[in-house]
Length: 346
Picture 1 (cartoon, helix red, strand yellow):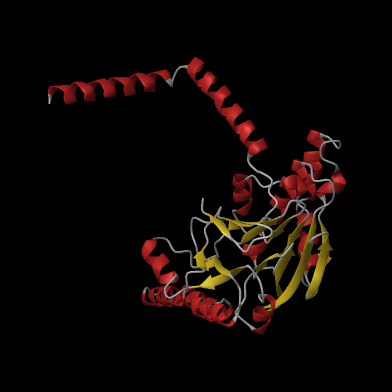
Picture 2: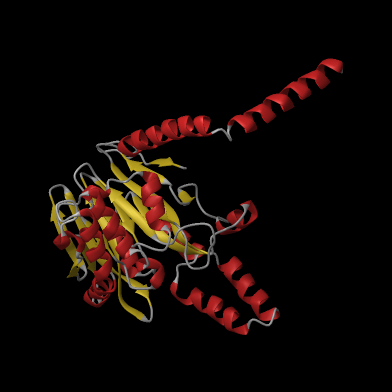
């Protein structure tokens, strides 16, 4: 017992000495040098190249969610890099993942709800600063010109200030201005081994809303945006390896709406109940999996984001083994020449 007491006293003394040392400028400066060096090395090595088709979850939440970023998915091949949507908080996750923003080729919008477009300019700014060699193109359905022009206008002075501060050689003004391209359902882009196809999503009263399918060297991924399951969904997932689809937990949303009503928050109760109309329930996605040959279904844009293991279990109640619940910073790797899907959790 005496030895234990002595050990505790020694550990307490060492902890106290350590705290004192951390207040000394010389110690702080030494730690600062070592820390910043580690950060600088990490930035350069954060993104490793691969021959696979890779998918990153930069944002897994809907507006009914806390602690996760809103909708954003990254699709990366050795030659390509596209983002699908840019919800609030997603740019921070892009940075945490170390995605190669200097070679971002486009931002594909599914529709223009705020939780899908909130950080368009942050994506533009990050890739501009990163050294993107051409203007960033924003792809989307009818209305993409209005959204893109508004972002350009709203941040005009920001671009002027940044170029004025850092110089036109580092931040060429023309590369800070977003371009846009309105797309229609069908193949919207073919670049080498990559083909991107847009399809119509069911998200009333929004029309058109779209989702996207990426095909690359025999591997494929579909990203829904916001949509109910429809005939178009069944067509586009035919033969796909991976489907990332917005998902709504009907038991949780119903209980939340009823609780809001009982608490006298009738406005919030109705808004929550209205959400049910235009998001795919987990039951409808299970049925989709049964009717299609998609290899894996990943729930994202979670309505609502489950805050604990009990709510996760409710969200995933009855789903098959090839269904997964995403979270921010999750990664999927689809090796070429294989049917494997490697799921990496943060």
